[in-house]
Length: 373
Image 1 (cartoon, rainbow, N blue to C red):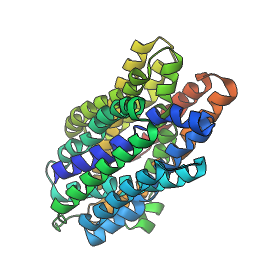
Image 2: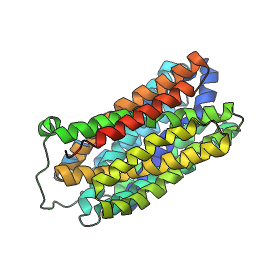
Image 3: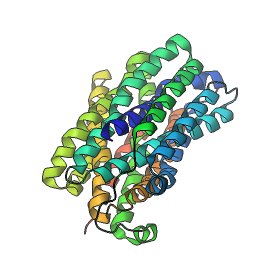
Image 4: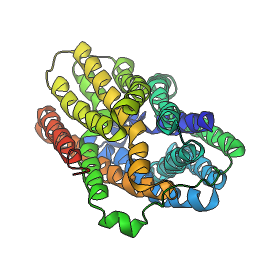
């Protein structure tokens, strides 16, 4: 179960988070600025986090096999159609829906499945599974940049679509529904909306996500502007992914000692404060350090969040609860990347973007401190 979840997240998130490598060549061909082209990523993230509420409920009701098959078909068809897009709006629809549905069907359902199979070491199991996100980002982002240089962005989309679809379909063939276990009754959606702690977790995730996904789209462009070549710039997203892998494993172990909630709060602090490093404008080496720090916090955030929800709100409806909570990340990511692109286009500077991300990240941390009080 953990291996299948790892593979599904490796493929789906590796493709989704490689978009920073496509930003410049697509903007150049379509004759658009960074803000308009960033809408590809924003629509995609809004789709996969927003549809997580539906895919989470679907996996609770129908099991993971049908959900993963639907995701594989959507991912392959969407990227194949994007590779043929002649206008920006067509690419927005095909990429956003294809990749968005693919990730939605791979992420929340598989986290819920792993959570359902494990009891005593749930945080560790989820942490290992979601390292697929980090290693997928580490591998696919620079690979996509190299392929774009050799094949162009259209053929690269097609190749990634075929490969990603094949992985999700293969995972669907080997993953059964988790067993039903006795445990605390989970909140219904109506109860969750009325629960103060659940609302605070939701608000913190919105604030953080506005900032968190900006580097995935705009850090490569910033690095290129600072003098890095295309592959090295795209590799910064890979560094975030690699560091997040370490964060998922190390901070998952920390959570076993400190408690999931306290470790989760620490992840928010690390991510928020990391943007001060980006603001130093100290060259490529400092950007690598920023990517490492952000990635470690991000990895812990992804790995520990499901355990926090399971501990505080129960496990019997974990897919639906996680799916609804993750719509907050969809809202934040849909807002952050396009606004950052518009700000850079308007001012010619990344300073307002970095300052805004720093403020939002720290505000999200303060919000998490209210959980449980």
